[in-house]
Length: 329
Figure 1 (tube, rainbow, N blue to C red):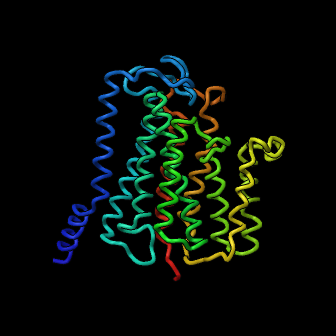
Figure 2 (cartoon, rainbow, N blue to C red):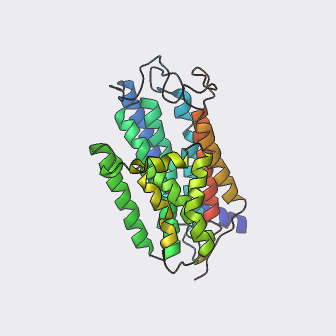
Figure 3 (cartoon, rainbow, N blue to C red):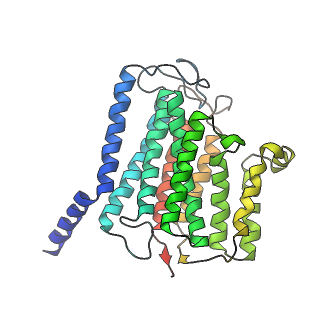
């Protein structure tokens, strides 16, 4: 009887886990709206997009119909699959377990799964429609995911509450959404929140792992080293400091007083798999442009499609990583 009872409990968990239902209905709703609008035509393309028959910004040739960039669009299904799996996994937990943030009905866990899922529709809207609205939705989805990581690290380092975490998160998302749609982005000072967030994520991750003087010193420097390795010369950035002043913010986590280490986390293998997937995706992303010798506009195997699949693997890996975390206090 025990296996039968376990099966019934899992079924009840699925039926009662409201976030999973919302996620499924939202995905179905997106596809329905996408098809309805697509059948009527996508209207004017974005100013930086090319016409049907030409090569897109991401190498693939622009097609007519529902999918302007078929391969680059369908590659985003990976985000939807792994995101819905996260919701399914959280539903199996039934309730929050003390000591694990990425567990059950924890608000941060639900936001993480939701943002991971939304990366799919957001990017599909951009590559599938080539419209201004699609581009805005794509950028918004990336911001909604990437800021989760460094704000969560700050929460661990400073020790502020989940309520403050949620306030910071939704405030940043709202400000970015309004600024990028109505004011063209940059918050009036030319800052790229996505690039800044990647840097803050790396810097805070180092300080979380090494909450000491060595972690403080190496955090911002490590970001600059990675920037150099990925083809963005640090010296050039310093010479054009007026347009790259946000580099200084990479060193801000090192200034946090009284660093806390309230949790322990197993950094292998999910940590390394996540970082390898993400930074491997960045390397491949650079090859998925029209002027790269590897670009084949008429191939179904597109570098940008692989970028999407590897990024979805990274979101899944970090989800698994956070589920190993145990709070010490």
